[in-house]
Image (cartoon, helix red, strand yellow):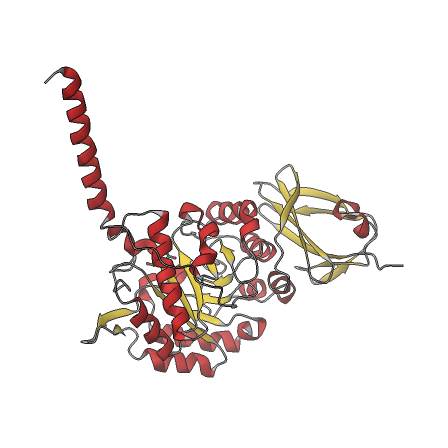
Length: 405
Ligand code: GAL
């Protein structure tokens, strides 16, 4: 062989080896394409509820889920709008002879659990993966998509989180494969005829916010998993501002579940998560143990004036108006013509903010009213805001335009 041919030969061998490694790593063949799934008309405002993963991970049991449902009724969360009680990974057992998925021993009778949750005016959510196994190694929906969707509908499930993670070993990780697999379950859910909110989880790969709507999904996680610390939470939250164009009624960008009450952040930081998620707006899925919450955690999760911002029917996105040193100033239009302005101190020391109302536009230069949504009081309408924000703290103000004369 000439040296030229040797080179080509080794390149070929190397190419083949890389290809074999890739297919061994990524799994089998391409998934046949699936038609786009029409919107299901659900989740006109960001879904609100609770999810088991952040606090319980693999330890979640049916008894805990019943406990969360009871707590949500007793502590006022249900009445404030938190309705989905979502079981994340590790509920799955083995399939029966007909291939139907069964819950494992931690869960027993899923229909009975759904009935329990529904009897309290709440809705039940569940979790699966397009892989043969889920992310935590439990039974996934591979090859059983229609059957699983029918089983969920029979149990009375109202929400499905569908996590690509477990499918990585099975299919090459490509946009086309993910789209086909997510659409496949989207079609299956649609065929059940039951209204089931559809939530995608795949860490935001391939700009999921662009292909998500045609899978029939109502929300998609735009980031890798959140953790209970300031940098994880704040980076995820602020990054959503760049993706705002792809989020709105029925199809929401999801910066992941809330960590409020899990203990790793300060009260100011948790308040900032609630302020930011509501202003974006993003789904509000509490991720803590709702039994025996302290007063501060309750006051954050149950702040109805802030929840009303999240749930504003127009679902318009927040935008960055300006920055003042470490302080980000975000603003959002509400359906009643008011604007909500948020000041967020991302710095490590307290920060002063001065903000004339005229920065919100001419109609707001002499506002009709200004409401402080965390202190639940009206502020003077003259001139503007002048205040100090603690490290990592935030202020949310709802500003009414001057009345027309
Ligand atoms: C991850 C997902 C988490 C949780 C976990 C369960 O892929 O991002 O939110 O659902 O799987 O195994």
